[in-house]
Length: 383
Image (cartoon, rainbow, N blue to C red; front, side, top):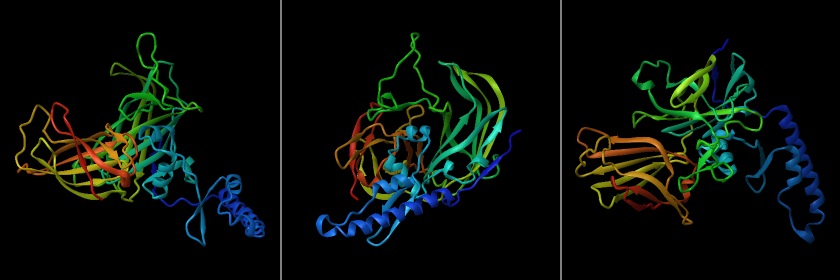
């Protein structure tokens, strides 16, 4: 029997074990510093005691010349850090800044899981900004034969309390994490960078399970109304029936229902940057962008809206970025949408998520696709 789980976005308290180890670490640091000060005239002051921090299982961070704090080492789930390719440093920073939440760190994490028909699903990691939310859920006690693709019959996601309201709608996509990521050029590779292998029949070999035999389901959701925000919102997620997918057909193997109610973090990581530059080859001008480590919103003005080509509105598409050190990430954006803000069609926007976390302060230029022929231009940013 499954029950809806209410997952609150609250402050995480250090457990007694972590506190004890932290205190031990500081005690060792204090003892070693006293011992070291006796030799200060020979070798100078030593700032960090790696051995003590390692024994405590915590990270010791210098926050000022006279104080230090102990912090939990945050570990995102395999699926989340692969899906948006976050480095260890990025995982720590976004979690500490409360842009991300790791549910396994919650003292009540066991109570957040839902078990039905012997299969347990639990929230693992959530990363959110104003426009996008990435959610990963761990799945245990379920497996499929090699070569089969696991999946759910239905996955429902909505915000707020009434799924029938227009305000509840989100743009959503989701899938089981298969261990395959895009490289910097957008080509698929395995997590360790090795080339993709295939079966004799040409099907790609996927790695759905981790070392413990668990899977992860990844959800990417974005706002429908360009003026909406996910920050602090309640998100409802429902999984129904587990099975396998083949040629868009679902074959059930576990009839179950796993229901979650998640309160998203409410900290904004976005920066607004004034651009005011015309996109060469178009009638569009990028007025400004709101950019975060996981998504961006680009605001355009246009003198005359171009004619539509089927579903293409002709709005330029920011595809990637160039960093200050010259690194090009030409295929950064993934998912989202674009449109005009009103019937006059003199103002437009693009909303896009990323396939990897970026450092906003390191972005020097935008890579913009301008036409149906995939022509691209670079728009420098001044910050």
